[in-house]
Length: 126
Ligand SMILES: [Zn+2]
Image (cartoon, rainbow, N blue to C red):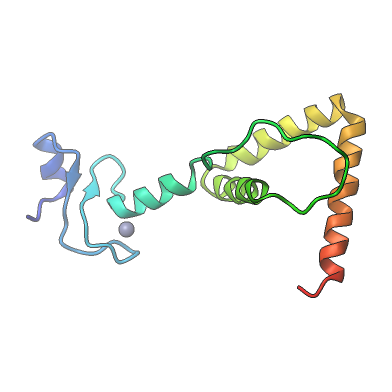
């Protein structure tokens, strides 16, 4: 059933349907609140939620290991989150700087390790 945004609003509905696909080609209901199609809203929600099952702590042995699956997932999440939420990057940078000021030794170690890891990757055949 085709129902415009205003009509849906007047009837107290949360969704409406224009009969036309959204800019991503989804032919589904749209949200009265934002006008976004529910498929696009779903995709965005997924992108902006942190990955599940992320462990709280890792043993700090000082050895250099390849990035764990979770670390890669977290990095991806941060990237997506930054795209969705411009304030996230600033907040993250502030938190990181504060932590680095409190843990200079560990911060140096992490910087060294990530530098080595990057060098190894560059020297590899990727
Ligand atoms: Zn859509």
